[in-house]
Length: 413
Image (cartoon, rainbow, N blue to C red; front, side, top):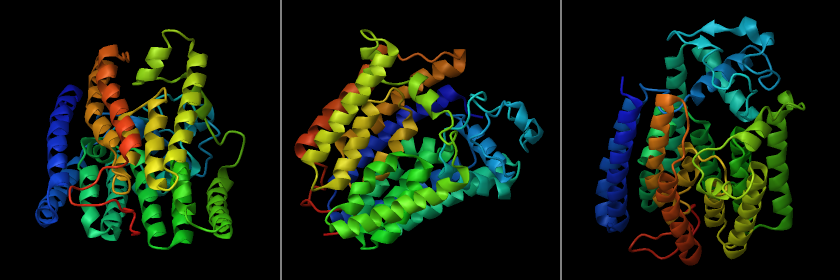
């Protein structure tokens, strides 16, 4: 089995190759781009198939996913009890690979932070896979591939190159395919909703986006994409459908504990955040989080004012701003702006997807000695280029192919 340190080195090397390949692809004329795309998608498919055989390498989140699915499959509310609670002791089991649940679940003293939509998916997969971790991974991988193929099929031909850039990124391959993260499911559902909206299927788009929001909350930022250019009556209808679907999915779990330990996560956890590390030199932890929240909100408001006529670009830039102002930034958080790349190809998305491999340094140390250390120089090298790229995005707008004028990449001319 590959060591974590070796995987992180390969991550950095693959990132360099991806950056060069992406720049070349984006600069090619359409006649040559089509040929490269066929080979590119074939290569990505082979890599995804190979990575489907490995899991839990750079993250242990999948242990929580499998436990949550196991609890749901047994008809128990996953938000009511932490894995370590004695009330769930009879649900303990040893998986087909020898892992003992719930003892292997990270942060077993905390209740789940994953919303009801995620629990429905995880529970359904567990009903089929039972205790076999490999079968769980295969089913998950199959769902992701089917959704991805649907997106490829629905996108216009000339913009599938942008999706190729996104799905060939090491962040997606390592943290969305090799390791299981709900962010990839959430991102793919969001992309499908945007495409359906662009093909004049707004009601279906609202339903799909609602499902994405119940997997993880971030797609809330994409709601204005559905509402843009519509009458107030249409907007109210779409919002009503979206809220209704969210309520329907939440209904079986509605209680005071439905948000699990999310408040603990928001109040206490911190990793890979340059802004947090800088502000924490001068302010206490609570004040830092408040200041970062205010800065993030102010940045999002400004972006939406500037790009109110281009909601896809505004939503994607808002995600980048939110991550820059978040005390926790894991690599898989970038999967959403990456999958949004066909609709809003941002410099900041490309740059952060490159510099994120620096995260591997801290993760290697963490796996070695159990202590997470955010080295200031590493954070500067990771984040400063992203801030510069975001400033260019705000000033100039999303990237274009060399031969293109600006169009709505979601499928509407």
